[in-house]
Image (cartoon, rainbow, N blue to C red; front, side):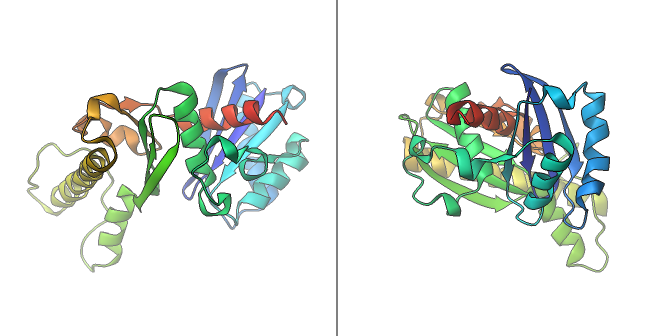
Length: 259
């Protein structure tokens, strides 16, 4: 079994592959104040519930955008899973994506998304990964990395509105029943949802116009990430919803690297 771990700002996503099939996945909260043993209390029971035996683990591959947490999970893997963790930045052959000039200046989550999209779907493609931040990772017809947009995530819109005002409440992110709200909560929900949806649609339009001459039907637009399911139904372009793209990318990176 190959264990893949994607460390994000809000959640740590963990999956397990038996062969090429994703056998299970779960999330735990990202917590920079937690200890290695505290992470073990969060992760080990979920691995056990998923039927994982330590002796069955062949390797563990990690992508991380949270430098504070990375060494904690690496140590957890060594101490509790009895493996040396492979970090994407150390094992991935970056020549596969020649337009990435400096691996230190692009997140390994973006690398995993690009690899997942290239291996699982045809190119050209735009991968929209929606989490604490949203990334729009763009791949040419030849499979080269063209570029990326990084925008604040949808929940940050709502949180900042609450944190910067004295009376406006924190409103959970969800799809409104109508555009105009009839009270403060429904007005905020509508503003955050439709405001962010228009951001997503607008950025996709700009990418398609600048890089693909507006030929949206020829470009695979792939949505992934924890918040993608909230918005995917209202995007104005045809969309592939692949919630496990980053995990698939990590498995492909392990296969490619032959570590």
